[in-house]
Length: 576
Image (cartoon, rainbow, N blue to C red; front, top):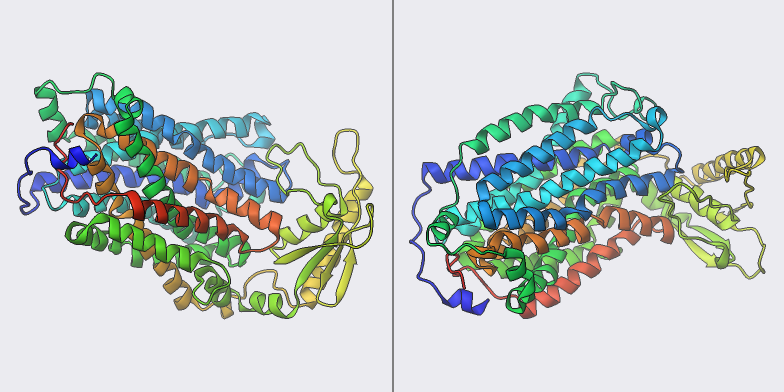
């Protein structure tokens, strides 16, 4: 890498942006906005999609499985990076990400017509997972191509500024999805009713079907683009790599940079990004219990206020360097994500979003007293397990009510029933019984219903709100906190495309930068919602899920600070 920085003549001095350069940025960014719109539509509608395609699962497992299907697209992103990265280094940037956008768009369009579970049974989630994986495969090839394409068109001294525009696309894609749902809601179209989610013409299908229009526009725009000048020159000089994957990952001098990019940059960037943009939405909706429409509205304001900072930090990255901005964003993220501290952003979201919930957690703490050997990890992705112990039933009931609780070891021996304590009131749980087909017996179902009602009554008596009171939500403060989370996102994400492009030589750039980017964002970031939700369900704390991004970001901060070089003066035309 150091040799790459040192070699090659300096590129042309920066000049005003030309009409062709503006077209390159606009066309590449617009197509990528569309692809992120596809991804976020699924995430935003995850609750109703879960009801439509995973109806046999219990509520807790349904929530996690829906997020895991969302994450399935992220699992295959590194494989898309390998397939399309190799293609991009062999045949060119332009045609490769033309293919990726068509694959992404057609997969999204197909979801809009996919039959639900009650229509075709288990094939519904199987086909949904397949389509999500095709989306992820396409996105695995999209980002590296678009980022490389823009960077190789950018003049020296403005690469971070130019590529920061494409960094806005993920946020703008989320904004587009929220606007689409806002429009549908104002037109009186019900797109979030679980009872109607299985219908052929349920409202949630419209955003997916509408994507065919966006696909047509994006393909038309990308067909008008010319090939990257850096790739074209390399092709004319006969310097194309014959085996970009072998060069990228089979030679230690390049492979060590791939590892450094992953663990010293992208992993931490990913958890701050997904925590600030996606998990914050889940946290407000499912744990703080704010109405989903209100959450979408508040999130939209925060995104709109925070998005311009992508350009701000892209500009600063060209002036003072990429590394210092990313590392500062990681440091602030670690500090402000830690739960329970005076500067904890998510504690603030509870305080300003549902003050009654915060007050109840302080004044009427909830606990489960049980034999800990009877307590299972509350996760059932296949729907084949039933949690029958008294501890499991108690934990599942509290999790369904999004109640913060602690689990304490009972002094009694094995077989003792778990007890829920809410303030001064204790409610004894019970052991469930199963039929031969592993379903709850009729008597158990009646006990579950009665138990849930008794727990809910006790929670009501302790003034635990079933949902946030709209009149008590401090909307300006929520928007301010969401905007701050967005600023952290822009700090870690705006400069990273330029830095990744500059780490690798032109001949293997598409392949080399794509893999660490998509492992980091696809695996470390993409699994954040599911991992954090599982931690909340298992630990009983609505803040437990935050420890995952805190730990990952802290590790990246240390590695990046010590080992990642500054690259703003790199000659990206060098091929050594």
